[in-house]
Length: 274
Image 1 (cartoon, rainbow, N blue to C red):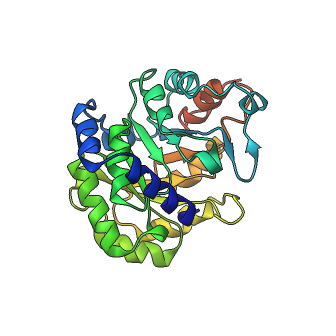
Image 2: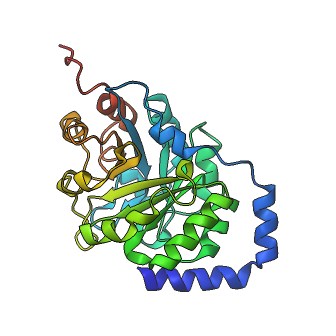
């Protein structure tokens, strides 16, 4: 996936000069504050749930039957998620593996007031400029795909472009490697993510977050990515001090994703209605 992305980036660089890209960024609307949207919990018991929008996954294929044809409208899905309590929106832009596209970011932002996270494999600073030009308010930086110098450079450039970075790890060694850079270069622009998804199988296991959370000092900026499907899952995260979660394909697989999100985000401590 990284090598495929590298080839795509080289083609994009050849098609658009840096001067042109800078001009596109200068013309873009100011970014929405993803950091505040994610961390601005309404009270002590609510979670910030960030639903993810993708056409398909490598493991499941098309997430809904209508997505196989022309029935994938990310802006409509995002509007439903906003109405039912989403804190922000995660948008998969990888075309080959998730059926995404950069243009989906702007389509989503035209329909909602929420900030939008670009979910893709970011391996080159060019992609940060590309992300901001496309309207992204935040980007995911996967620690496994970047060395320490690249992480530092990406964090600095992302902050200069006024985007939030979600620095994502999966294993303990990755967390230890990136720990010195969490909150760099400005605390209000960097979140730490723990991926619960096995990249080889696509299976999600919430225990990754539960196991690594104890190693994180600032859990207010900790995001659990994947593996959340119920209020019980949110309770498990809350027990280790985590109150931000990205929900992946589970909601889109539901008959009506919007109300499914509403059921998920209501207080996990409130008594269920009869």
